[in-house]
Length: 136
Image (cartoon, rainbow, N blue to C red; front, side):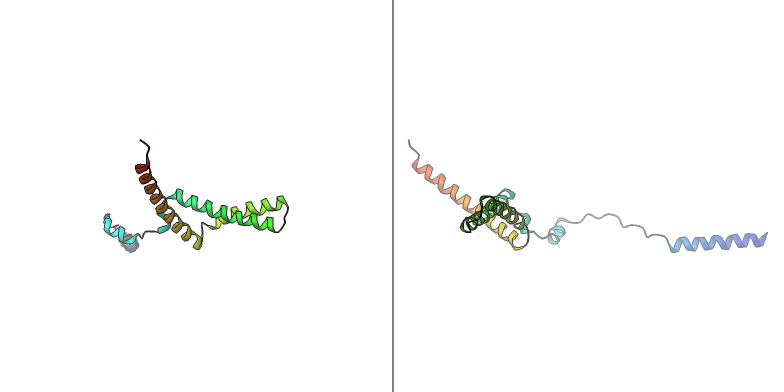
């Protein structure tokens, strides 16, 4: 009986050691990250800033201009009417899609920022002209 007791104690000790060996460490308490540290980590992506509407207008204008060039090339090459419209439509779709990738994306961002300032200046000049030339 004593041998059985000693065997059970040895087995229990083995299980205890195994549980201690594979126990997970206690998780550290949650510490909120200060805003200054987050601001230092997060870099401003210039492609995520600015007006989405202006970027869409710039992309549309780029695609429309490329489609116009394709139309001119098709007319100059004396393609049929269907071929000209297929070339124009496919050029529009391809340029619109490609303006969202690579260097064209940076160009769209720069053109949208330029368009924003041009619109602001035009509105300012228009308001000034109206203020000084309003009849009455």
